[in-house]
Image 1 (tube, one colour):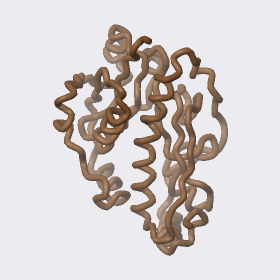
Image 2: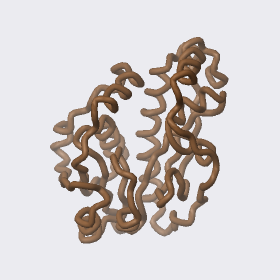
Image 3: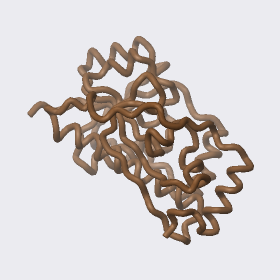
Length: 239
């Protein structure tokens, strides 16, 4: 059986890169390379991460994986011609989005043979867009993750795996967010494993999600309602 070439798209300041690498290696999934974008997260991004996780997901230093000899390559932009050429020349089968700071253009989406895999923190197509976890709490609907192949339209594409989560009455906002993150790391690895284990399946023609609802960043007033609801244990899916 042919061994797939799998590369990751990320940045040097990514809080989630170490966790995704950890789960992929935990599933014995070989990583061809990590393709790094030059754009780094700002103070606002770091503040949002701290608010959501409250220290429950400390940064995993990348040197922990030095024994696996995973090469890192640096490019100015994930959607650049240089990145596209690297992916094509390296015969990459699958790219995995691990926090790209870009809206990926068609040239890079089409560069790998299978596509670009993403894990979206919302149940598509009902929750496309931003702060989907918070909107789900506000609307008393299910929170979940969706692993899908990316398309030119945001939060659309063929779905490989989709799962919802339940939470404890005692869970606070940061507990919910941390559980969603941890679930997404594992679900992403399972999505990659599904592709590896089914080499003859055409995942590009899996169930394609589109349309649905698209959400903007939740406003402060609604966010306060979300915090009150989840911290009081009154969200519908806190059992």
